[in-house]
Image (cartoon, rainbow, N blue to C red; front, side, top):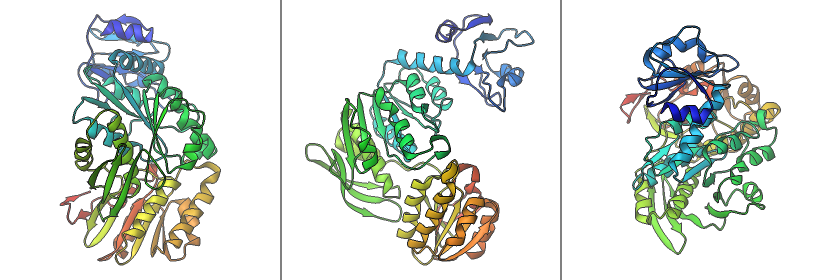
Length: 449
């Protein structure tokens, strides 16, 4: 309602009458009828430039610059800062809903863990979750704004690039429960060190009453020594409240025994590859158990999960097995992916690896370390994509090919890939590694990527 938005933002209504809005939008190209356009301003863009287009479809706008032309029949709310107004509205809606909020943060596995939690809890409750990986100071409040108002639990992914980012998101969402998946090497350009990565992720503990943490991440556990809330652990190697044992990995998933407190156990057949994804399952199972979900329903939610697009998808390409993990990359996730490549080896292994970005001064060493790692794992062929990976590739023990970009890498891969090969494609998001597989027919999938 207009009155509530004006109250939440402290804004001034300069045109239009009381009405209900169906949601918020920041994109004039996709805004729908009944939505309120938020004219965000950034270093390289200004939403106010697209006001005319936005108001053709939308019901009104929140602005920090009054429109030059009158907007007949459209609501215009004037605020000092439109980003702050977006946060204010989301915070107002979250507190009004009065439902438990689960915040999911950590270096790797956030999106998969969030989706798994939503999959399990969704069997019983109406869940609001962040869309895709909309986990920053714009995406998270936009996701909250999509609520219907009758949700009974929220599962919100929280990402960060610098100290204070998680605190900012918590000031919007006020999580009751925190999941911290792990602490690894990522976004060093913004953080500077792994200690600052941990400090930022653990900002969520200032708000959450209960924390679910990976018992096998010693560096993470060390950071919890001053936490006064309840801690629930999950893991595989170390003693934990929720754990997995008797793990039998396969080409496209794993079988294992899920163990919950009190001696409760269930055999799980999980259809997503990667040992690290078992950690994501355990985190979701631990949350569900605290929410009172029975172990059979937890099993059902886990086994019905089909993974997240562009993250460790296993595909077949004319006799070759392809691991498509093209959404993003950092040193920690790269290490897990190349281990999976080595594990799934049939004839030859081919690593098509793009640059890992946002590593700052650590970039050169990180890429060299990765190349040493794939040499240790006896990877047969490397296709290096981007300047950092190409420089590091000189230290590879096998045969390597240099590619300027992912399109060039695609041509190289097509020329060398054969029946029985196992291929990994991975790199940071802005390297567009999905183009390596673009247009190729996946044999068993029956569709072009």
